[in-house]
Image 1 (tube, rainbow, N blue to C red):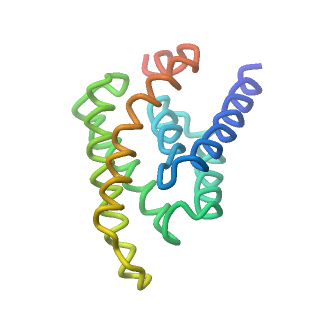
Image 2 (image 1 turned 135 degrees about the vertical axis):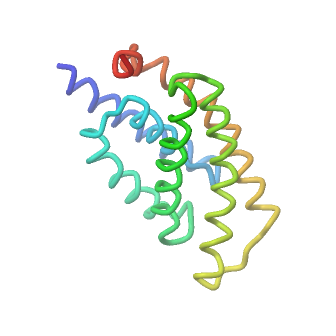
Length: 156
């Protein structure tokens, strides 16, 4: 029953994420889901969710082609590095991680734009990375509250 509940929760999350991303251009809501997967060390679900996240992001065109893979690698690397220093459930950790991810969002866009001969709009990219950085801690707090204590059980 727990597996069915997880699948339903993730499908509802995906539907809500796609809806929110349709209204707020440049925001990657699925990053928060990836952080929750990493926090819970739920690698079994990550095996099917991460490719789905990538396919959805590439299909929706929220980033330049191929940038989503680099972005999610940055999320995973920054999370793993930060986990060495902080407890993964700590709001301060998520806040600092989101600040680093805001910078990474900007860096990935800056890296990928010239590779594809696209113009790089500094102010627009900066605004999107700030929105991403501000969104992550609040969305994380809300989503962790809906997970019924699963993250805490995984940490213990």
